[in-house]
Image 1 (cartoon, rainbow, N blue to C red):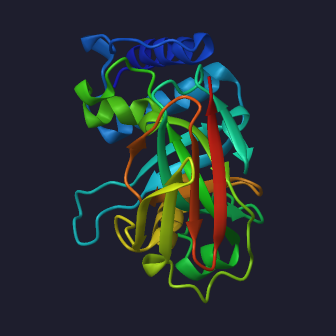
Image 2 (image 1 turned 120 degrees about the vertical axis):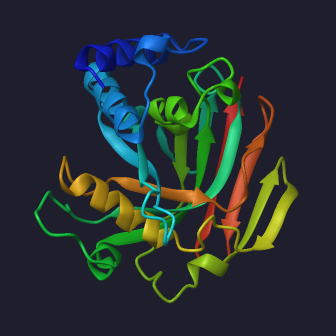
Length: 255
């Protein structure tokens, strides 16, 4: 994608973030046509905003599909909160929530030539329950392509995390019992539900995606995919998620 077109798309998305407004879409001339295009637009938005990236959301490549790319998106420091979080609806008017397992990196995993092994990544992280807040810079994200949504940080609106634990490796993360509540009422209760059954694989995929770029820094998080599906709730509602053996997180949308 031409650098001028990347900059044009990034300027529109960054302006929407600053003004907390929504746009109908990107001009046809600067819509991303590939995952690489969308990641380049993300990176240009980050540069334009000048805000620290404190977390990422990520997806791992589909196993056995060589054409399936890993996906990542930044979550900016002002939108990362410890539980219980309070998220203004001006920041996330679509009020979407997903219950997830996340990891926090205890030390840097800097750029290097060779891949990081799964065991290295596991040894570098603590785990926690988390709620990803979902909200788009597009008026109707369902009308956008997957690459459009990827350019817009995969519709990320924020991140709320619970207490981190170091002694998590004995847990079967793919089969954890999870409970999602809205205003104290259970809306999801099940065992497992992660898209690939292996959230650590998503953390490894993120490290690999960043290994040839900025790397991963101590204190950053990666949130690794929804166990509960995407739920839209209302301004004023309180959402909670708990994972057996891992902990809980809670947040409220504040009108």
